[in-house]
Image (cartoon, rainbow, N blue to C red; front, side, top):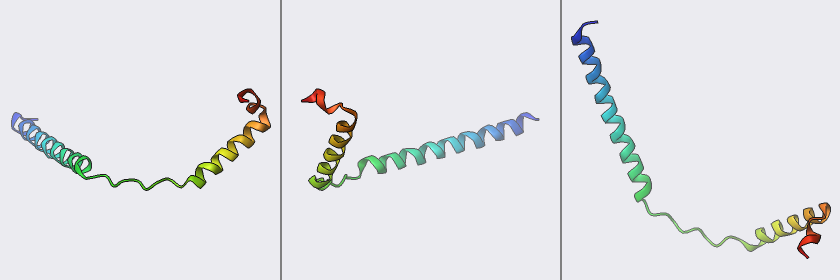
Length: 68
């Protein structure tokens, strides 16, 4: 390989690296500067279902008795 060929390869590599870094920087800026919508209140019924399932499982294996 000649020095000219190596020089062209290096130029292509650094041009690609700069382009990739710029694209990544812009993508991250778009992700982190956009306002995040507020999450609506979580339905309490779903929490209750989980509590009942947990209590049922702990009753089966006897681990609920230690908490009482």
